[in-house]
Image 1 (cartoon, rainbow, N blue to C red):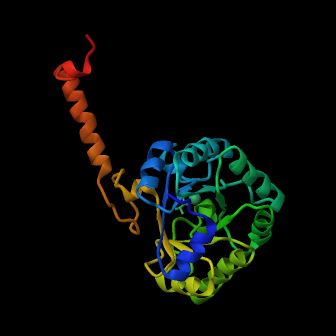
Image 2 (image 1 turned 180 degrees about the vertical axis):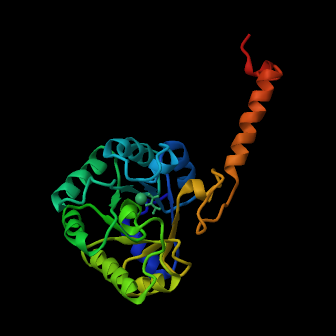
Image 3 (image 1 turned 90 degrees about the vertical axis):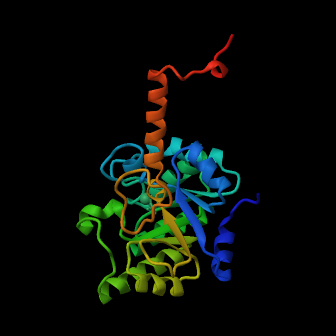
Length: 265
Ligand code: KIV
Ligand code: NA
């Protein structure tokens, strides 16, 4: 399969073909999603909540991200691999942002990075772009700023906040971002951003009139009992996996596993 490249994202928007994106944190799932034809795999800092057992994304470090990025980029043949820049690893300066992004590329094998924030990060995005690193923006609800935003809340609800959101998305796009994630924003605001930007918008809790969709894979697959309102559970893998583990335990206890065909003479 031909690799997905950043210019394909722009082409998809021009043709009105929705871009598909999922998170992945390891080689096994990345290989499955790549074979399924998912266009973009995001090694999200949601690895904190989903895989590392943290309460959020804020504790996640570059050292924790890099092995996951390497696992995912090593497993894909087609998908574009985007690495999240974790909290505290890029905000201070464009130079800090570049240094961390270079690690995601050299040590992780990423094809692009994603950072949270708007106009105040335009210089960061511009430096990365000049350095050959494609950047995906992320505005609306940005989990790394959860403490400032006052919890998991829809952003851009009133006119002033909506204007600010459009301005932030435009600022990162004009600085060179190849796509912008819109998280938890009113559908009407997401439509406006998508009309204003030439590069694709990728929504999560942003309605259907955006240029692509992203979900955390464990939400998409129903791995956990709770999932956010904006996610659809396309399977009940958690229940399926629990059933498999129970069946295995029962077979071991009943001595029906291993059978002759699993044993060596
Ligand atoms: O870390 C993540 O999973 C994300 C997506 C929700 C966009 O940033
Ligand atoms: Na993230």
